[in-house]
Image 1 (cartoon, rainbow, N blue to C red):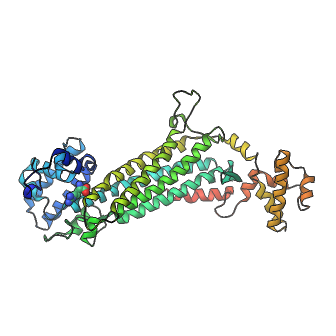
Image 2 (cartoon, rainbow, N blue to C red):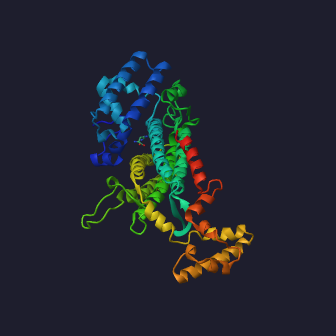
Length: 457
Ligand code: ARG
């Protein structure tokens, strides 16, 4: 088949060479964006009197026909037409005749493909922001139910201090809030139109780039034609923001997996988000959380892949840049799968408050309370730390916890200790009293929830 660009060629490549160079197998995902870009372009060409109205109308109606066919999955692409842009141009010419060839006036595939990618990400990022927010609302819901559920908080994965489980969950809300803000902020750089930059240097036709940008819902245009066609920062930024988001999901996944283990038993995932084993009848596996944790690697890989592809590329467009798409599509797909999975998993998980209560009453996570108690009574904190540490050591040797120490033993360690220490050592008291701004105190968690709810509207 002769190529749309075949004029200066004497020979045609063999099919397998065409196949190697083609991107149609994956860039057909851009079909609607490509048609949208073409419609804006032709509307602009006619408004600037570069194309007669009649030709533009014909082209527009041809593009609309292709759009309907695309929506119904009726378009047939061919590898010999290389990519979605040439395929659509060929289909347009088949549809309306040689006048279809006028569409490419004052445009190149280089600004065309960049425009498609901007449009694609503009739409997907907006959808991803909504998915993040839906997930945030699931977290708020669980956190609200468990403001007063006390669990051990960890550092170094060692019991540290008792905290509100709602407080713990809300940590992920704030991570996601930053992820959402980063996505929102990136739209500023996504919603910029490269259209009209041509192959690299602009065009001699009296085009109106601002008009086509406006028709496409972009808020501005690239100010340098070389930059317009060679910039892929907006994709890198998306991949980087996505990597951070996946890293957050992966940390959450890890906790879900730990909490579901027999060793913790803090939560039980709903059956609908768990799987069984083909051999071990007792198993209930947190597969979905594990998968999200696993997929994080792919998303990082996509970021590093594109960073490496772009490294050292001379200006302006290079065919290397065709490699920008699969990782981006894969990342969008991964995010759009992972976020609703997590949302559902968190919304439906069962929180085992009895296990949590048992855990928090059988550890030394209240040791800081004792040290603080002494410090509040005037003992230098460093000394209070030492006195408490020695009492902890005594308990470990005797096989019990601070709350089990008789008052005489406590008073032998420090005469500052009185009977009210036992109330102080209760995990509930410990949490309630941590009422510093942003602390785990119940009042603070309620305050935090109030702020969070405003952020998800
Ligand atoms: N399929 C190409 C890509 O995805 C489109 C741009 C091709 N431009 C070119 N001059 N070969 O990057």
